Length: 149
Image (cartoon, rainbow, N blue to C red; front, side, top):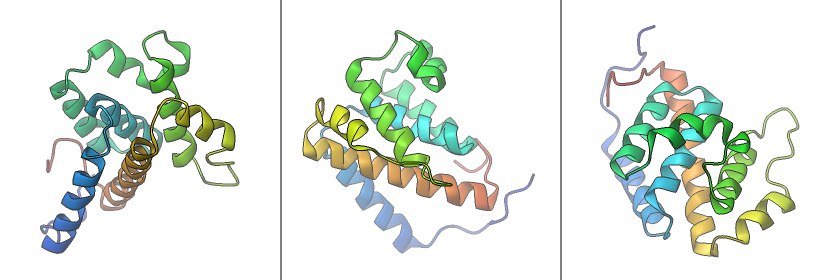
């Protein structure tokens, strides 16, 4: 399957995305957790370039292969803290909003709020939204892992 778009993205879009990444980075969330959030949303959406990118970013941040391989089954493994589990639950709920899914319930939000500050929750929410944004663009354009970036 060949990618649909061949041209470089609009420079204004690149600048806007860079600003969003700065906001996320300033939110005080560990880079390894942000990478896990990006990975889990991308797994749900079947976005190979984002799965690839999140694994590479997580490795650079010091994440272990064991945890990366088990992110897809985080509920059934002993490899994640309660705080990480709440972030992954938030990621899944915010990503799976189709066909009448409940989205982020009070229970899911409150569990995350027990572990993270409002600033961190904002950064994680933005990371989830931005990941879903990239997933949809990559799926629409048929971008493949490792081909472009």
